[in-house]
Image (cartoon, rainbow, N blue to C red):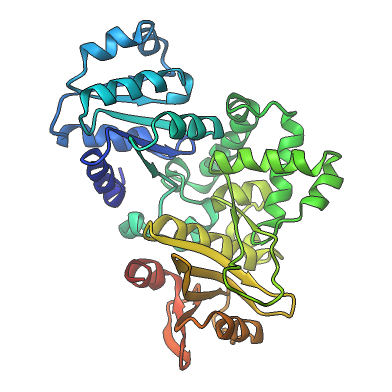
Length: 388
């Protein structure tokens, strides 16, 4: 078992601040394992219910009676989306008890779940996103080629061989298409949704071209936007917005799209092994997707991520901002001997960031310019990013 110390610490901290703590993320990412590992260290009695198990779900046939009987305990409700009508009752109980750490709810996040809980439990709930393994979490077992190719889902990364991992990833995709996305409210044909997911994979690391997707699939732009919203809500895809604050230049305002795990990405792209990956025309975009996902998992909550691009050619792969101020510009290159692009220099001049990096897959760390540092991804994620 991988000890996910940083997330575990955060859960304990949130339980001392909020009456309700929500841990959200895709299926099979380790939410249940994480919480069960924390139970022995909790300072109050705990009761755990898996709402996908009929025997546990039946205990909530009369939810008020059941939860009142355990009002002095921490009640863990796994797969809360199976019984969304609990939210108003939970709100009433936490308002009555006025006790932090009363509920921990786990959910394979959906737009409905997030919308309903945020409206009903506003001010009473703290959210924690649990994603696939980050580099620091698997530091002692880290293998770059494996992590890049198979992704960070626990079952995939810890699989005894690549064949088993790829079988698991393909079945994960199939299950989401045939069951889970439907349960989240996406009622479209699974074949169409798979085609959309694969087309998003081919766009990963690039500007989202909804017009192209709409024409290829024969559905409206509005429908494409709604479907992508379901992928985002299930933490299967992510839009990265452009940084446009207080910038007077003509900017590209279309978001970039990323698949949230490179193991899923390679299954969708039908990349069969690491050697084939190295010859893939999308290799640069795939490495960018990997780095963006890792930064998302490791960064401090107060930092926001953007990209920057002007119609004149200035371009920055990743802008790290605090509030309205860009503090770091990052270019991501799958190269052992990177060069500074003109677009990157122009972007730095526009944003006036004093801390700038070119991230590469090789283990390097040197100044390539007076304010631009070439650095290996491992050192950036483990040592530099936590200090930004």
